[in-house]
Amino acid sequence: MTRSKRRAGRRHPLATAALLALGLVFTGGAYAALSTGTVAQAEVDPNSQQTIEEGKKLFQANCATCHGLEAQGTDNGPSLIGVGAASVDFQVGTGRMPMQMQGPQAQQKPVQFTDEQVKQLAYFVASLGPGPEIPSDHLVNGGGDAANGAELFRINCAMCHNVAGAGGALTEGKFAPPLTDVSGVHIYEAMVTGPQNMPVFNDLNISPEDKRDVITYLKYVQDNRSPGGFELGSLGPVAEGLFIWIFGLGAIVAITVWITAKSN
Amino acid sequence: MAQDDHSSAEIAAADSSHAAHDSAVSPGTAVITADTFENPGFPPHRPRVTDEDPKREKRAQRTVYTLFYLSILGSVWAIAAYMLFPMESNNVGDVRLNNMFIGLGATLALFGIGFGAVHWAKSIMTDVELADERHPIGGSPETQAAAAKVFADADRESGFTRRAAIRNSLIGALLVFPLPAVVLFRGFAPQDQIPVELLSHTMWKKGTRLALDPSGTPIKAADVTIGSAFHVIPEGLTELEHGRLEEKAKAAVLLMRLNPEELNELPDRESWSYEGIVAYSKICTHVGCPVALYEQHTHHLLCPCHQSQFDVANHCEVIFGPAKRPLPQLPIAVDDEGYLIAQSDFTEPVGPSFWERH
Image (cartoon, rainbow over all chains, first blue to last red; front, side, top):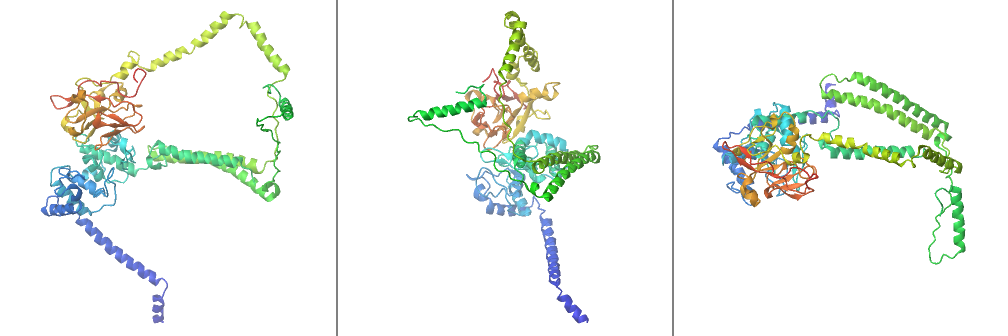
């Protein structure tokens, strides 16, 4: 009796599914445990000789083609002496470098290195000459004054990046990217270093506390949806006009056709 | 051929006699097109399903009154939404809910009436085709004569034609009447100053420090690193009691530092910059939008309104777009304490053209 019952249990149609689920839970759990392990390892000592050596190796393997073996710059890429850790952390950390190809501006793409490698590269370049540093957590956590940040953003940034941070077009194929899902650290680093064609906003132009406010404003815009309903990408009157032109007038045309059509 | 005051019957008669006349005479080589055609009449009447099937008719009737009841429901809902979603807290989210639900109710109310009425007319009301003959536009000769007589009598009795002095003075009075409005418009411009002067000068003068927008902190030359763009107002603007926005609208400046080797300056303007730091008016010379989309590598300045482009490295000459003049340059220098100051006002009016400036 018990034997046959057990057998029936093993042959139960759900047995395979249960076994599969169990296996998945185990592998998933093991993966999660392992991957949190690698994140914990990403603490990199900026001053250790080993970090700089590792960074140098990465640099010579991945960047030296354009920037030169000693980061002195070539015809294909600028010198990186004195650009600072912030610049490398931004360019490599957002996937803009290594550049896929020369063009109007470096495009964002999946990040090519681990966090640890990005930091090693950054500290290697920082060791070549003094430059802007990677900002501390306090400056990028979005805990500042959003109203002050909004005013500064409107004066200094909104003309290119759009008042809601939705991005916009520039000349000859260049564009200001949307800021809707950029991390606080990368926003800060972009302001300090002026990547691609973005002007530099040094600490005497916008102080570190003011930069913190700007980041706070952008985080506020990210977290609070527009009270006006559909944002349509926050692209402004052209996008909104096009929308109402197509759908508003389309609805009017459809209703007019319906009114004048003969009933069947 | 046919005069305007002919009735349609006369026109038809004239047309037919004309055609008969033409057929009698050889047209020669001229091509005569027959532009009259038979009135095809109405297409055969096609009964609707609601005419033939009483069930369908009942259903259409139900649809119509359901739409009208929905409209009532929408109106009541709009009232309820006003109470259910009040805008009492200072939360913008409340405004959103309030507007959305009242709007949905009002939409339902209006669309219910509209769609119901149209559906009623289309599917239930009688739909036989009718021709509504157009009557002649002109009145009968008697009416026309009577109307002309009214005018002639009025003219004779008032003496409008005969008493020329009265008539002309009235016309004169009517012509002068709108003038006060024209003069009152002048009141929109500042009273004790000449507009051309106001448009030609800004707050900048010799020695005014360049200050950061919006804080008003003066800027040192050393603060402006290569590749920087500073949004600048004249020092003292933030303390202005009134007219601050008007002054800012004229005096706004964009300050940039380029590598001095990349800067190509006009011979007479070489003393206007400082170590590659240049200051240009932020007001587009096309229609006055703020031009501030600065690209630090190409040195292009782009106006977002109409895509005018200025080349900062080449004394802000226009390289694309509808702007006609380069952006005016503000001559700058450095004072004893290292702060950036203006050497003078702009040497030309900033912003778009006006009557006295082309």
